[in-house]
Image 1 (cartoon, helix red, strand yellow):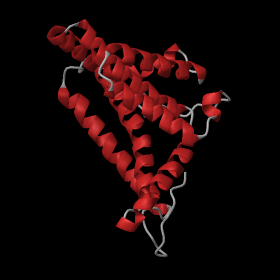
Image 2: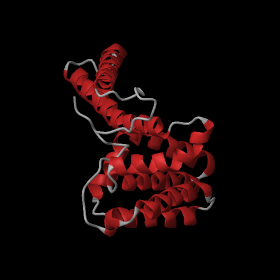
Image 3: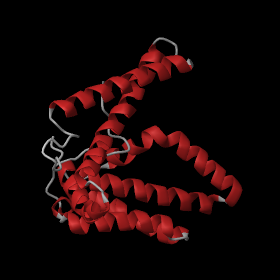
Length: 215
């Protein structure tokens, strides 16, 4: 079963300054750009923020293909959203909503495609570490995030494969032919992941101490 990284970008090694930028600067920069693109009200500021994110995308070695791939699974949602906003509030409002969403989406993709997953997990552990005094477990939190980053592309790819297979058999309009195989694949993937974690001793604390997630 294919694992497609549509909404969640896969790490692409490179030597651009975006790749080399320390994570303590890169993460606040990209998260700040994405948050600002949603927070600012005007269409012009959001457009400028989107241009800034796109400039970072191309500076990191990304191409037009990487810009289009995250939109494939959500093109219908974006089309309906733009049509509704344009009908209710006009084309300027539709562009304001779309530019904010695209800036957030591309900022997240830049972070994930220019930073190894393990570095992101280590940064999450460090960020959550002060909450340990309140009973939080940073290592388990990072493990959960790592599993999420691996699972989402797999599930998206699973749905795409099942849809193509159903279309080849003329069953693309049959909900059962689309939903049931995806559910079966999801359950099988979850069981395999759980067995792999148990085999490596992850998720348990045999010595009373935290277990760090490792590939």
